[in-house]
Amino acid sequence: MKRTVGSDEGRLTIDLDEVDSVEVQLVGGEIMVAGSAGPGRLEVEWLAGPPVDVSLEGGRLAVRQVSELWGLRRGPRAAVAVTCPPGTAVRTRSVSAPTVVAGIAAAVTTTTVSGSVTWGYVSGELTAHTVSGRVDMEGVGGALRVDSVSGPIGVAGGHLRDLSVLSTSGDVAVDLESQRGGRYRCRTVSGDVAIVLSPEADLTVDAATISGRVDLPADRSRRQRGCRRAVLGSGDGSLRVDSVSGRLAVLLREPVPTP
Amino acid sequence: MNRVFAHGGLRLFLLMLLEEEPRHGYELIRMVEDRLLGMYTPSAGTVYPRLSSLEEEGLVEHEMIDGKKVYRLTDAGRAELDARRAELSELQERAVESARLVATSIRDEVRHSVRGLREELRHAMKDARREQRWATRQARHEERANRTRGDDGGGADRLGMKALRSDLEAFVEDVEGAAASGSLSRDTLRDVRDRLLEARDAIFALLGATGEADQQTDPGEHHL
Image (cartoon, rainbow over all chains, first blue to last red; front, side, top):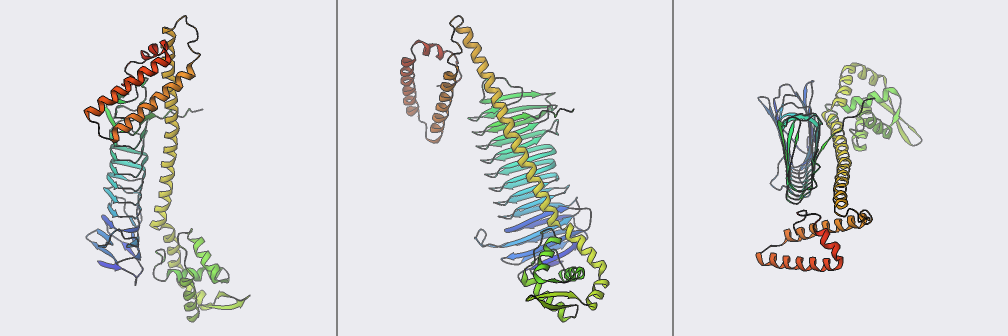
């Protein structure tokens, strides 16, 4: 099935009876993909620029609006919203369109230049790339990789066994409280890194910075620069944080006293 | 200009709203917006032609009240609505389950959580720094107390020492920053070191004997 949505049609809504992968590529506008138990559905709204191409073949849904004149101020724009089964692999690409992905348990990849990336309750092999867009995530699981140049990165809660964050100037805030162990790595140039861990974590924490400050738990040393190490619990898992000038802080979340 | 309604959905929705009571056009626009939780606001250019065509079909009629057209459902309109009741409930259900609505509420929730996390970390980092400073000060104080035991007045200039320490730290930061932004050749480095030694001598002269003592306070803390 192939359809196009341009200024004549304006919008298109189709039911997705069978879909196992979703690929959306836009310039501007917005992208939203949500996993749901109900039947799948695609909603496309053309807003500006060339028509949006929609194709659904063998369970692969592809929605694309591209232009050779990317980056023009009044560039192509479209709003695409998809509901699909949670097991659907999702791949999105945009220049400025913000992207929201929620409730997916499969491979998810989001690439954007300046659009924000928001993921909620997504797990699997996860990759997000952005240049200047902010990245906000909650309840993410599996293996996550996030690259950003200047966009700030925030990961609030989740159950990640593997995390790799790379940022140039964006600040990084990660909550790993629900994890006792795993392999985690955060690198920045000038962005600050702050990570919160459970007091019961079994992690060897290594922090290295050239000119930033370091705050590690259970570290009474007066020296707050250079390479530092803290062993928490059995120290089986590993957390490495590196920066050139960004401040590195690894903190333990004090348990809330129960009355 | 909406992705909530498909295949005459808005038409059916308008009939439903008119079944409740007669309304004028603007009121209908607001009602659609309210019922769909602000997810979709139809424009006047969408709603008025829709009402005209419903009138042509004989499903609604209007009367002028205070210069406004107030629309009401006709018997034919009520019959049409009854015939499509199932479609209507599906439409309402779908509107609420729209991917867009789900995604928007999740986005707000996620951003709220991340904001909360950043806030918490900011506070925790402040606490950690305070604790660290306290430990540093404590250690320094003990060292001083050992060194100047019997001198009395070990704690008298603590504030002064603190100010000096932060000045020194800022100095180090500034110099490191300046060195990082330019090129640091062997010759430049030697000149910088000479200047530092001169500055050190000048400061020692100001501080007198105390300066000599403080110099030994912290070997290796700053590699000036």
